[in-house]
Length: 76
Image (cartoon, rainbow, N blue to C red; front, side):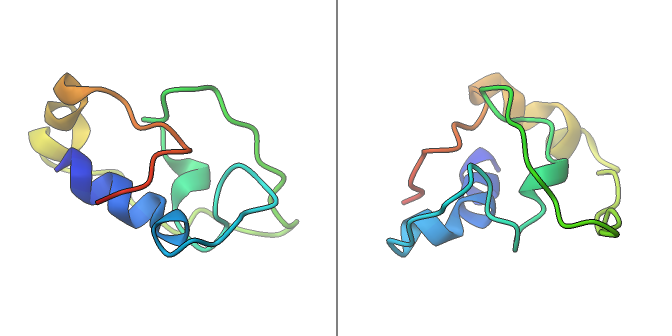
């Protein structure tokens, strides 16, 4: 599960895209609370939270047992 989250959140890096900001605005990374580092993001004004809270143990807690996700991590 951790690898799937890293893949979705850092997909731009997987494809060699260099991001000007720390987080890809086209993912839900701005609202993700499992980053290894404390990240700041300058979201465009008027943007609402497009994601819902996970409802199962694996997506809430379980994956964290394998370490938080680094925003520089390039998924396999």
